[in-house]
Every structure is written in C-alpha cells, then in structure tokens.
Length: 100
Image (cartoon, rainbow, N blue to C red; front, top):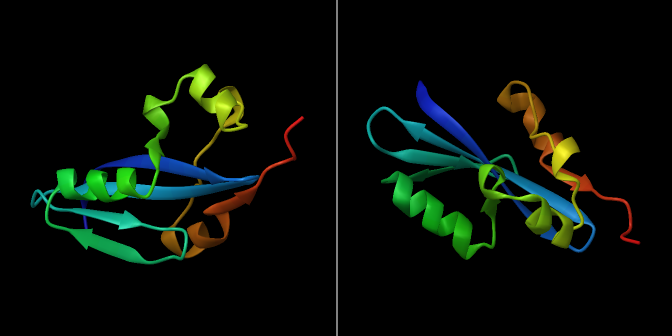
C-alpha cells in the first residue's frame, strides 16, 4: 500500500513513551499503526486524527520544548521508530528514565 505521508504521534503514561504512526493514503483514507502492532483503518485523515487525540496522543511535529518537557521528554533527542513494520512493534513503547 502506498502512503502519501506519515506522521508520528506520541503519548506518555508515567515514564512510558508510546508511539503511533498515522499514514495518509492516496484514496483519502488513513491508517494508524499502533503500539500493539495493529494497523487500524479510518475513512479519513480527520477521523484518524480525532481518534489519536481522543486517546491523548499529540503529533511530534506539534510539540514545542515546553510541551515536551512537561511530558518528561527532550525534544532535541526525540526520534520516532524507524524501519520496516515488522521491526517497528518493539520500538513503539519506550521506557523513559525517571523524572528528576
């Protein structure tokens, strides 16, 4: 399946960083690859974004240093998972060092 573009989203729960990838497809639909390795289809980019926001995810592109700091993240060193889908799943949940 060919995607037009991908966006990485994240959420935090305590000292855990959780990633999700939103992929916008040529047909105007979208899919979210989640931390469980599931690919969830959506009828539009807007509905996929709404689902992510309802689950308290934020787009990495929308984070500023203050937002990242409040979540216990260093924006400068924050890198989304990389690689083919079969290698992404173990990278989708990251334990963060305890906050000081």
